Structures are given as C-alpha cells and as structure tokens.
Length: 120
Figure (cartoon, rainbow, N blue to C red):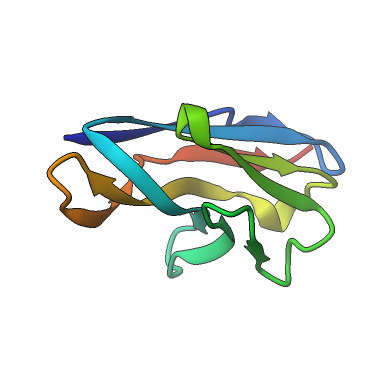
C-alpha cells in the first residue's frame, strides 16, 4: 500500500504565509508527477500546482507568483510554499501522486487533505 500524509495547514491572516508538506510512503518504486489541489464546499476540486520528477512545474493562474511547489525525490515529499495568502485561498488542500508501486502497478494516490483558513 501507499499512503500520502499532508501537514502544515492552519489559520493565517491575510498576507501571511504557510508551508504545506506531503510525504508519500509504502511500497513505492518511483513517483512521476506530484501535485496540490484544493476544494471548498460546493465547488469542484481545482488544481493548484503540479511538478514532475524533473522539476517542471505548473500553476493555476490564481496562485502564480504567490505559491511555489517543490519536491524532494529522495524523501518522496512535495511542498507548497504559500505567500501573500488571500481569504479566497481558504480550502482543504490535498496532495496527489502518480506512483509506480514495487509491483510495477501504476496509479494515482490522494492524501486526506489539510485545512487552510485565511482570515482575520
């Protein structure tokens, strides 16, 4: 089995910063893309940022210039540095990984999510 666990969420004031982490563990052979998504009640989950195993990145227009995604391949961990946070960034943030397991089977895995609240 493969598990993804996020950490680093919480309450922050507008203009503040948070850093999310997501560690993958278990029967992992390799990981291709890793990414962060977010969802608010009543809305569809949306892409925030993704990165592939070469370090190429992709961002939603709404977070460009404020958020930075990075990963540590040796630790199977992806990070999301969030700066200049706005109330509209409030959401449950979940990480996603495209994993090849030790059985060589490949599939996407999701973490349970971490709440980010931007408010005074």
